Amino acid sequence: TAFGRHRPRCAGRCLVAEVDEENNAVTASVCLILVPTLVFMLLVPMRDFLGLTLVIVTLLLISLFSLCLAMYTEPGILPIEQIRSSESQRRRVTHVLVDGARHELSAFRAKMCRQTENCVEEFDHYCPWVGNAVGRRNYRYFVAFILTVSFLAFVVAASVCLRLLDLKFDQKRAEHIEAIIPSDYAQIMLFVLFIYTLIVLCSVCGLTCFHFRLIAINQTTNENIRGTYFANKNPHDKGTCIANFISFASRPIPRSKVISNITGPAHHQALVPQDVLGLDTHRHFDYSSQESSGSDDDYHGEERKKNHATNFVPKGGTIEMV
Image (cartoon, rainbow, N blue to C red):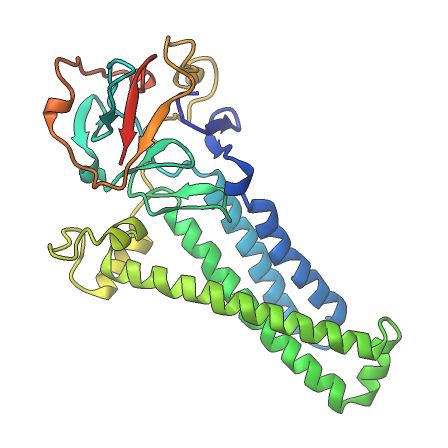
């Protein structure tokens, strides 16, 4: 369709990335969160640690909800400028069309995403664990997801540690759990669960700290890796860490630039496939590591289009992503 590998869902109210299996680990992500938590529930009776159990259930629900939001929220797709060129030519995507106006990618801190084949506003990275590109519209949900998973892993690890000590020093409780699972097996399972949650805690907590640092300096992962503002001042930096965090938490999520919240026949005009528009349904991209910049000479005599539904690569066009 006209949305790269994203497909409309919920009557067009959201777009879901349908990527290759190696780029989609959402099922594994859910299992890695849900299964250890259920094992913890089995080994740790609620009446013994009621408060901690309620906290764990709450964190589990929030993490799964944040995962769904990060996955199903359109990340901030921008319509790229339509290019007409011969198959032998390669063009770089350096401009997007927003509300009929032509902008460079840098104006929206945008980049072409290799996995979803879309230009994403404030592109951060592609995350297989949420099965979607992370950009302007779903970055906050992604951060909420990894933050709650970090807290969940910490609370489970602490609870398991307390449970192991409880089984060691309280013979009555050890006999009680032995009626469900033999005590030796229960302690082995608790120990394995403790090691697992410790590994998750170290990895996900490290990722969370990295993104907190990016928020503090108002950069994306893409900008940080490329060193976009290594030699130049970051124009998006609010001056202080607190101001950047306030901006991250309070700024509203913009409306999608490629889909509408209108339902019914009029709505589906924005969801016309490329083959209906006379466009190539298989866009051929040459992915480059160069910076997202370019000159107007790359677009000789091209008429600017105001209809967003046609602002994509036509038949025979070959462009280079940056």
